[in-house]
Length: 107
Figure 1 (tube, rainbow, N blue to C red):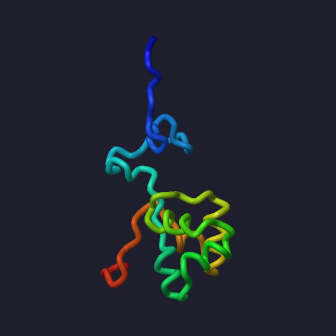
Figure 2: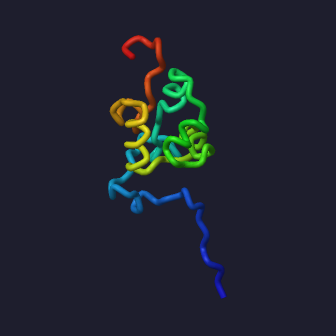
């Protein structure tokens, strides 16, 4: 009898990507499916706690922490609700590329 193969739930081969595209060769390992966000910065600007944001969105406050740390990528619906909550376009909150640091030339 052979043992079943196991994989990490977050490990996906390139062929199983949701968009069907192969990951770029230049992408560092583990960063291929990263969604960057400015949730923490937006919360700080407005003086909103994680719990307040979570309550407004109808999610657990730990979910907000996971999102901010990049440990969890939001559904499209949740991403749109977060952008709507802050009154900005979704591209202001989320990106597939790292946001430039504030104060950097060309930012």
